[in-house]
Length: 384
Image (cartoon, rainbow, N blue to C red; front, side, top):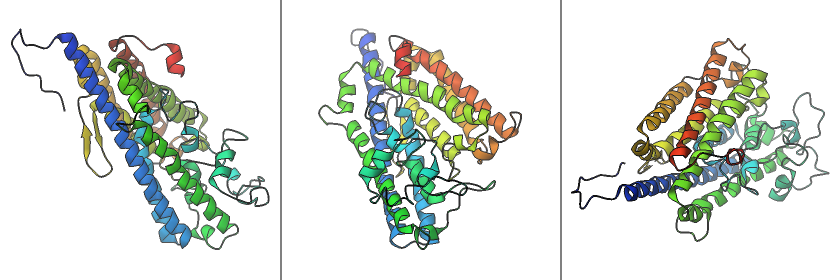
């Protein structure tokens, strides 16, 4: 919601520099409110996932397995927009941050549980080496012997709920009996329970870091710096997410390698939801609006409105790009894994490559935002 600018007499008119600083401060406050609300939703939906998994492990059935899968999908869709707050030295990916314990990928699923054709003795099978499957054990093992040896986070839980995806027409289809009567069912239930609880465990500190009114947390630090610097930091994350992470790592690399293991949410076939959610996270920050999981709105003076007062042409360019990217993402083929198997001239690949190119353009355009915040990004800032 834009601030109401009431015309005043020349003697009473607000000083232009003071008005600009005030609007920058309001835009920064809106971003902070959106980030905190999104993480609050993430925690709530992760807790709902825990409940669904608890019901499944208490009394396994096909119905309860499907309910747990749907809870994962919903929680994941709430989480996806929060990736717009990464890549800027914030709490999630600063040194010691929980990102690798939440969202690491791609994973070598054979490390977790036996898969057909693998000779790896999985953690679930190896009760002698890993007699206790608790949070301490899984956290210590996460990426211990390789960056694909992932034992924590969204994708470890995803694999346990769906199993490998070997279908050309749907996601993985792990039988519910894997948690009931199959060999190692008890350890599989335990691994799933601990890994699911770990998602909430690693999300909660992020919410705490962004809560208002907490002395010396990350939000308080952001509120204490110049508003332009705070906004430059927010947009810096969007620059890296749109360019390096989405355009390159999550779209272009899978298209070029045509390897399904490069798909982000490969077991559940929900990668397109990830992409759409990541884009929505950037849109939320730019427009100053976030629809919470319960349907209520968080909104205020926006980055777009601030930029329009300083550089109307740039504001128009960014808004147009985000509109185009949102529309392109909505038209992506649902089966990302099948689209990347196409030749480069295939219709699915063409849509993905076109989106990648547009995201690269958005990243380059967003870099110009920093110049309107006082100074351009340095190479060191963007690498960090």
